[in-house]
Image (cartoon, rainbow, N blue to C red; front, side, top):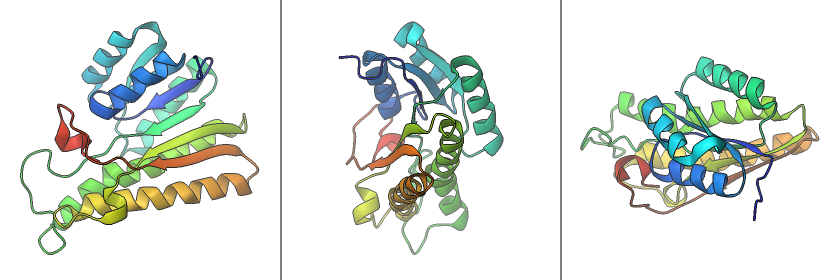
Length: 203
């Protein structure tokens, strides 16, 4: 089946792991996929493997200007955005063991996790709504986590950010409905996923 034929999709954090798998699945379903990642070289490698249906772009999801630039480029090239997957996220343990429990986590480490895993989702949702508004329809998919529903004692910032993603998805969906827009917004809640970079892909 080609359920996404004619659709333009953007996936964040798609240079490896879960994001790369999502991008590949979308291409298999007939989509034109923009593979984005903070690591532009990784995004380019994934897009090259996927062929002509994929295009790479460097995107720091924490930065408003980066979202504006990538969406402007996408709309100029494709004319429309149909699907956004906000997949980019971090655990806070990417550089090794760090205290992330509620008693010992530093404010800087707390902010760093939320900047990517929550602020990035907020900015992505905002950009997608604006890009999808002219057509009046689209789909926003936010990758939350089981951890956002049950908490993690040793990863307070990660659990908090994923819980917020879950609730913000509901807010986005309600806002779009109130605006008369057929823009869906859903969150997905995986458990731990064993990838080559499990530190960044543990959900």
